[in-house]
Length: 269
Image (cartoon, rainbow, N blue to C red):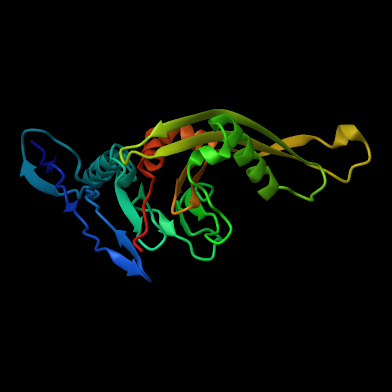
């Protein structure tokens, strides 16, 4: 009987990686980090060839079987195991300016963005979170209710966004709407306003065309902007979170966690 080659694959092993990140201080600002994440390494394949007389396989086909088995195992293994893991968060605490919030642990800090603090998703560049604070010398807020009702605050927030995104390009058109406005008393006993708006930007594909039918508007971007407003230290604090509308539908629970975590704190004299 012909000599046979039997291919046996050992079960893939699993590697666990648990990073530990230490807190870092920035000029009176203390960033506390707490991360616990697990990443599953790509499974190694171990092949053993044994001589047997039970089942005949031509020797020249043995490597083809090994290769096909390896490709099959890789096709059924997640290409990016990190996305299969639950999102972990860090807490950012600014003791100098008096606020704190949670943000996804893999977001990176961007300096020089014009806000008091700015973090951005390194993969979805249109997704970010920032905090803006009114000037301590020109603002005397006692409560977030100084902005009026949540609906009135929503109109002010939307107006501010549209002013910031004003464009001088020909053929640019913006559509905007206030999705929701609400108020809440958080666990710290303070009143916060929550505002959500949607803004779409359209631009003509040929803005210099003479005939109107040659100037076709196309959607450039469709984003959701979420703001949480709070008052402390006679200042107005605003957490602003921006995300593409399609990303919001996939990540709403994580985005809500960031928003719900925002707190304004009394600055020690």
